[in-house]
Length: 224
Image 1 (tube, rainbow, N blue to C red):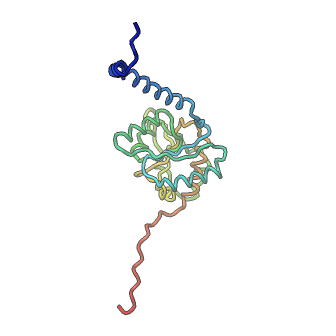
Image 2 (image 1 turned 180 degrees about the vertical axis):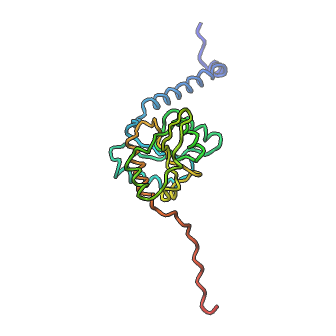
Image 3 (image 1 turned 60 degrees about the horizontal axis):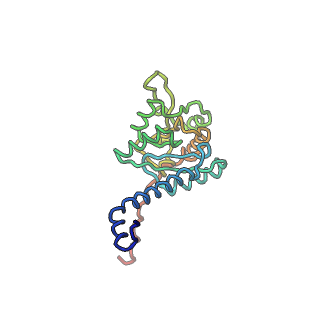
């Protein structure tokens, strides 16, 4: 005998079976989200250069600068962007270590402590053999000795980072405490990352540290 369909039977049905419809709805949302995630267009690693800042930055200034470098020096890249990581003591450190572990990001700006710990385990690319990069610092008379670090598992010593205070022009756009620029060893796009690094050094190595503007004294009123 079939159950008649009326207000009472529908009310009883939804009273005891509402969770089934909710489950179907949640499952549908999950499947749509999964489909979007899987099929969303992604820029290949070899077609993007990412500058990760673990500190503070003037987002507009950095974006405009990277757009110019993209157009002039890296026209074959699909994306040249900056990503500012959170500086929260707990979550920020976890986020940074995760990005490093999965080889995400290409050029990093890091505070001194993070640079020292990560360079000691070989996370960054040695820079001393890049003649064009080294010549810019030699010509400017700037010493890179603070960027040389020794691997913890061997006696190998390499130039793993560039102290930010040697690049005053860059410090006007972004900052990390006693910061260093470093290239991720397994970033996946090393050649183009080095192109970005050389351009940054060229553009900012001789720029003076910006001096905060001071208010001009108010003109005196005649007769006072």
